[in-house]
Image: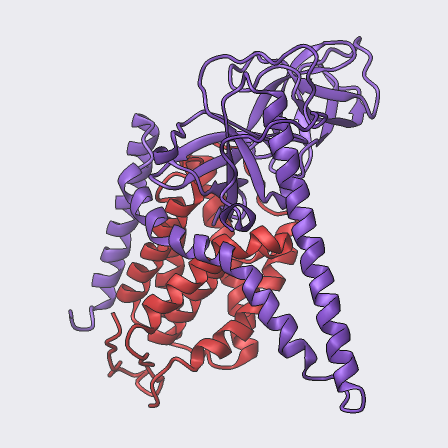
Length: 177
Length: 301
């Protein structure tokens, strides 16, 4: 999964980043461990959606829609699996498949290396991710779900701040170009 | 690897993957199945890390306290401060152990006072990966005799029920989850009504008529009607009462501290349970040692 491709199109000036071997798998194991374990001791950190942040990051970095959506799907299904029977398999899978695809598509067209761009995109994708989840719950599961709460707005901001820091950290896993 | 797909190919792939997962959702809803095999794989892959983390966090805290926290001490009184810090750490560790011992003692006392109820101690090792779901993982599973729909409690009050079991791990749905709940009644008036979660820290008591008198601070206990929890276990206390249509809107503060669970007790039977009339949760007297202890650092020493 760590091979990358050159985009030899009009946007070829946008760099496609390569990652060290096992970086993606290792990152996923760590973030799922953190997502499931840390909130037990620091309850406030349950507000973070680390799987979403990683989906966005690898989508923006690898800039290949196909691998982006497949990685998003794998992350989403893993999150569904760890969330228990009250969350059917596919709920987060669908949302993160779409986010992975969109992040990769945007990453292939825009320079998303600047922290401000990353901050804005993370808020955008967080809102979109939440919107997809609400749609799924309402349409597919017939569950009442609100579109927006103040809590979600705060969560979007916090995730964006943590996302910028996390992305800087994950940049270190890239191979030198 | 496949070469760079065209835009149309990637859109097609996106559609196919989303459709596949929509079908997966549909199959689960129709068959009431939860894709158990894939859950077993994922939970099985992650639970060793959770288990190791749970047992390792104490040593990490110790390392942090012993080394990193002392880096900024002044050189003039380094020795004195060092000794002081070591003593403080020992006190903290001892307090932590005392606290843990007290929790375990309360678990054991509870079990001794309810020997008619088969129970098993367990340690909480993880939480849900979904921020909207209130579930926990415990370090007991099918090998320990845990089955779905078994009740989970603490000496303070009820916690939830087992919703999924794996070989060495189980998942517990907390009563505060939107789909969680229990049969309950007001302790004084004995008015029965189910209690359900709202996805927030407070619970909701659903079907109490406006004519019935309910006071803030009144205790709510289990009714036993759900056939999961025996009657008269603490559920919570009334925190808010408002008139509603057609029923009162009653919010409860859970008796158990569900935000900071470390050890729990699993009721290892699916038969309807009865408590002794003279016993009450959390007030049991100490007596003979129980057989099973939670898998805690204390228990392993």
